[in-house]
Length: 216
Image (cartoon, helix red, strand yellow):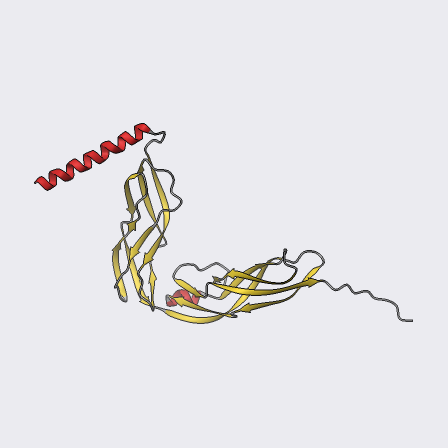
């Protein structure tokens, strides 16, 4: 009973302190509902995971808008199967109450599938006027895709985007890779790209000017 009484007193003191802070500052208490991406931690090597993409986090209290709200499920020591796991939300400074919907989600863990696929470059901007692209060399030229089998099989192509407008001569640039389906839509959930970035060696030179002259 004494322990329970101390807990109640602690809660009351925390609430009173919180209201005191409100009255001392310029902020006012507010409520907000934020949709945030759901993450996972501690997935064993060789496994893939299927989880909902997002959850809704409700915040109430004296807080400034956080840059990012982190919500995740912990799959530590879980093997292949389907589980109901609680969603964990990292504390938000100044929020007195934090709730998440749904507070539990279905998580499916499967054996990881993988395949190699060639990397294609996509030019976002052409060389400036008077210059032309001579060559693009990739290192490496192939990418390993790992993840849940159905999602791995959806990947039609792995691309990297390169901007040539400010390149003259020979330059090395590091660019991220992106997996896309047959319609060109990015696939970001449920797969991993190895590597995530590659080096491109780009050769841009002044365009050759040709002129026809009459033969005498």
